[in-house]
Image 1: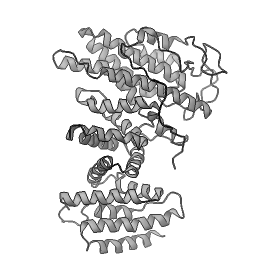
Image 2: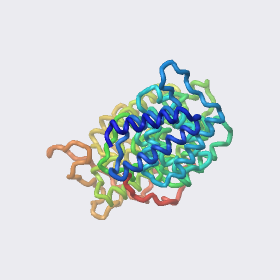
Image 3: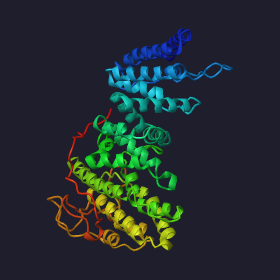
Image 4: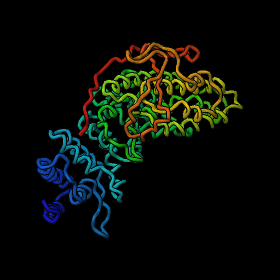
Length: 459
């Protein structure tokens, strides 16, 4: 269908819609675009979304005024609720997944225009309603949206949901918590956005207690949750700049490492007194993440990607280590040795297991240079000095040595012949972490209970 024909059709539809009330006009737009995109998908796996359909959605669903000099449209509270119910019902009843996804994307993908604020407000309310009434198709569409939208918009959606379920009504967090049982993919993307939003750079950016407790309960129940997006994304996919990571792993590593010192800084600002209400949760989260990494090793080995495809980037570690060093300098006068030791132990453990499982591809020299300005820590020295002597995690690997990977990593430049390749510790699933880093009351968990997350590339 040519652009001219599409424009004429959309123009005719618009004139007919202008004579309708807001709700019936929105319903009619969805009806026409359902037919339009269904027809397109018969001829192409990925339809081309023209400007016309987006403008119709903006004007008659998002309620953006198009006429110059016209007053901004404002729905009453009842009309807005009816519109949200209409959208929920449409996405719930649409049996064609590609059509549902393309209309959701056309409706809510940021366009860089004045409609984006209204678009985001409507998306936040629709997603919040979908959580409240358990509309799984809407949550799955929101998960795709979170994966394909700039991180700044994803954090806005996450903040709106946190406000609704952690602040607006006491106890409503339990409603959000139940989503884990019906849409783990949405939960994974939500955690990724939340971990980016609450980066612990200040007291106001510490995750709320109820939110932290819910996320820890999700991941502790099944650590594979943090890998769902990564495992279901085509290997060849590139991550655009300014978008969320394929996994919340880096953000959660940051939480666990920075938490002891961030809460000590909060204690300093409060003028003293213990601030330990969340520390056991971070210990539990740290354990669950290390177990999730062991799942990643199995997956990468089965796909012949071990040593070639990393989930954590060395460039992401640089700001984390720099901030950790600054916090250690800032809090040292407070005699925060215990908190500093815990933070450094967690970082060392995360580095050790990430390298052993193939999640982090870097050299020992890179780590030594990066961590050289951190305070001395016995476990960190052990990690950056070389391999320990555990039993081999793979039958073809020699005990105590790291495998030399000769195939260049996917997405990384080819390493010259004279350069040393990344090496990885062989840490078996049953191996215990060093005894001196044990935390009293550290949670004990049966390894990997729960649901299956099969590898299913997204289209």
